[in-house]
Length: 177
Image (tube, rainbow, N blue to C red):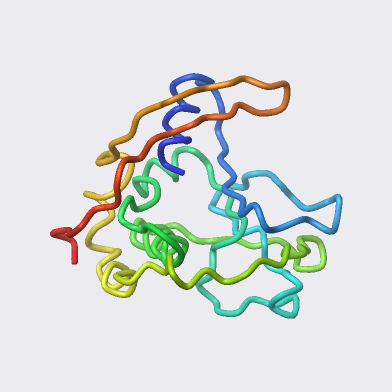
């Protein structure tokens, strides 16, 4: 996500809002507010899989929109979460650490259906709990300012730009945990 953000800034230059959207969530209402208010907005507040309610108060996963200045302020997403799990909770801690509030739209307006997929336990991020414990201390050093990647290809389409990015291998160990 960080690499795509940095490439978007480099190639597309002018935008003031970023929306991070899980590919397995489909909006069921054409009026879902895909925009940026003054603060980060957790948009996917009403998902069928969770009975159309938030599983826990701090959740910002699924669909998150935020002004670019706030994404820069939190130093983007952590680069240490590989596999499945934890990166969204880490983002919530980053948002809280810099003193920002998470807003949410009306749940009747922002409804989603989750495409069924099989759980992939083999890629579960085993160190995610250690990383989450240190989120508020780590965000200044781990994120946009510490990212290493290579742009393999970039293709502009009418409605989007496709980036093929090589992130290398996951870290074997880290001084962060």
